[in-house]
Amino acid sequence: MRTLLSGTTLVLTIAGSASAQQFTVQQPSLSSFSVGTTVSVPDRGRALMGGVSRAGSSRSTYGPLRSGTNTGVFAQHSGASAHVTIHDFAEMDRRALSASPPRPRDDAVPLNANATHAYHVLQSRAATRRP
Image (cartoon, rainbow, N blue to C red; front, side, top):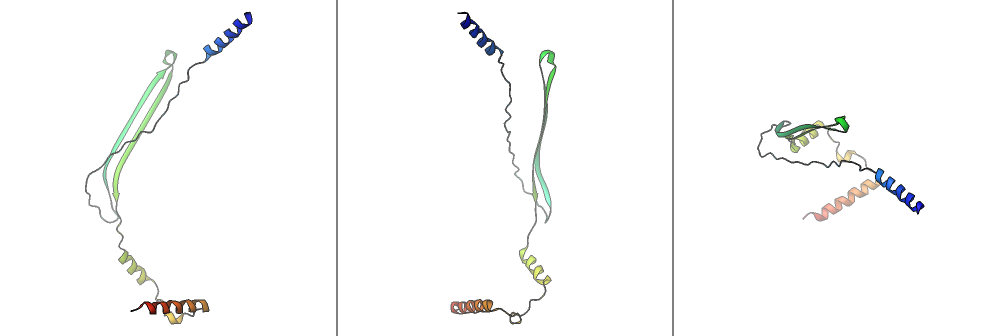
């Protein structure tokens, strides 16, 4: 009987010394906003259409005689802007072609045997497709 009683006391002592653990789970905070407006922006220009800013802080104390402290600070900014670049592909082609050196005539460039064969095959196919 005495052995059973001391075993029970040991189990109760271990169970009594366990303490609760505190933990914090931080989940992401999502927010959205929209801007309903029309802006006029020049080529390679930009315009700010709107934004939202938030900030905050907190402090908590704990422990005996409030000896421990925790501090938390956050800041958040969201903004909407427009950046504009206009691409005129016809003008880009014209400038690229005017800046390149003139190409030699097709008959001035000698072709090897494989290239000559491929050229003749393509010419014969093109001739059969023409009405």
